[in-house]
Image (tube, rainbow, N blue to C red; front, top):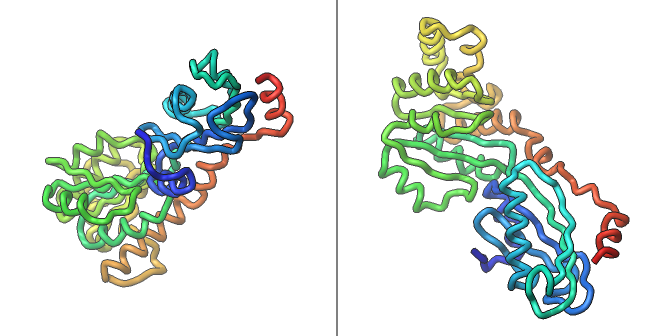
Length: 286
């Protein structure tokens, strides 16, 4: 689907929403072509933004970009020539050289269980991060309210009959925050998350007393000392004290930012590594 956003506006949108994307740039033309060099478009798995000329050329470029996105692990860049008559059946008759640059989705994936006051404040803070955030609850009315509110674009509210169902839907290496309205459910979630053995971080909201009770129950359930100590409770950095929702949210956000600092740089670190020699070689072959 083509969006009305231009490529500059699209960059801000896709980066904040935590999507993987491909930048397609016309780096050279020979003969008649639909757009000039330096024309750009942004392609995601479902949308394209701006245009490099439309028609079969653009269709072919989008298909190539989505093949890169589906592969998921590269290449970080691809240079390709498109003879308009031979490859795209366009009557222009020229050749267009296109650089496709792949930018993966951010490394940070965060799941928040519970839509209470602290979580509501927290998602607005974490919404400024380059991360994909799943916000989970079983209370349909709350989830519907969140869906119609002005949420950050990288936050997806999800509803389940039981929040435990989402544990199976998670991917490996997620940052998880357990902060529901029910202590019994909190414990069930912590057990299920530890059973996965692949969470990057498990944070549990609550008091020191709650943390000690949970640790005793986890020990009785035969979890190892290392597994029990991997549950950060009370979650948050101790330097930010206070019991107000915004104070707790800032404390938790600080800990998550400390944990994930550098993820944004890593996600963008796959530089193209192209030289003018590489580009000129492709242009000469056009």
